[in-house]
Image (cartoon, rainbow, N blue to C red):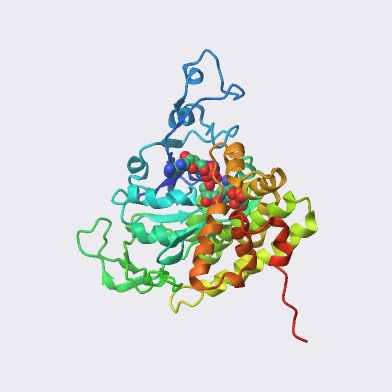
Length: 424
Ligand code: NAD
Ligand code: 13P
């Protein structure tokens, strides 16, 4: 039979780390996966810094800027976004997105969320119709249509099924193989026998029918509710793509995977904690200490759950978001804790307040091209909450937006999140 071919779409700090994890695993499961992992790289020129262990004054590669893909494939290391971490030689950095995804049955989406729309446009028509996706993106797709999960918007754009991976996973720690846990949500819909695959469709098998993706359309405001889409079945000569296969793809001794079906809960935890991490950074930047940070985190996790329950639970067809996903899984409370301890959003927000410098400047100064997700997510979530008339019901998310906008000061956070007196 055939084996699954994996492409990681994206190659930043986390994208490269996940490519490493996946490459280690496909090497150990040669019966299921092809041994090579393609990694699409947004090409750029990079000049090796003189303190890089690969720097060699006599080498052409060090004398002038080189293509990042050439450096990655030569040194088997992403010298810009994950320096110091060897990656398996079976990870192939590819600047040509169509070539990278060619014949891939598993697409792992891992890039800053602001770039996913354009990337999906480039992918359109270049993927096999029966591909499946996993989104490792922490963000939300907010548009005129409402607020969508990236798993959903990727699925819609490419007409594939897409699940989600998210957890308490600071990339550099995972890359160094320090222990962490993650949550993978994978919940493809059941076969719809009323819609047989048209004869001659690539991948069609007379015994398989297309899958009805209608249930994936969240009933959140403005979503594509009710719009029918049909999923191409995986040809029967491939190993099945189920929870067991997903576990084999991502689980490592240092990276424990727990599978769930709550795609919305997993995606929302990863996206919304970035806003909370900014708030934690703001109060830490004021020098207020751990109690203040804990208060912000307490309010933050409650707003995460409330956001999920308010906007992602009233669909008659999709699985409603589960509170337990936030309280019991790595993608919920654990990600909140790690992100408010050492994440980039937390660290940059802290420096921004402590040094009184706009966070965008800190991001450029500190992150060497890596991207904060919390700032844009705070704006996107606020635009959505405004449209829904619900800003007041999410006082912490609203406070973070107003602080970024200069309409409130970090010192006002206690007043902004103060609870109303309870009725006697
Ligand atoms: P990153 O912050 O390292 O961003 C840099 C990447 O963006 C590079 O690969 C760069 O090539 C790419 N890029 C820049 N401009 C681009 C463009 N115009 N089009 C396409 N790509 C472009 O990225 P990351 O850390 O890999 O984050 C990816 C996702 O994973 C984010 O949603 C993030 O929240 C999430 N995440 C990150 C971490 C972490 O610790 N870094 C952990 C878990 C999840
Ligand atoms: P930052 O993007 O704030 O670094 O968060 C990383 C993360 O998602 C940890 O799980």
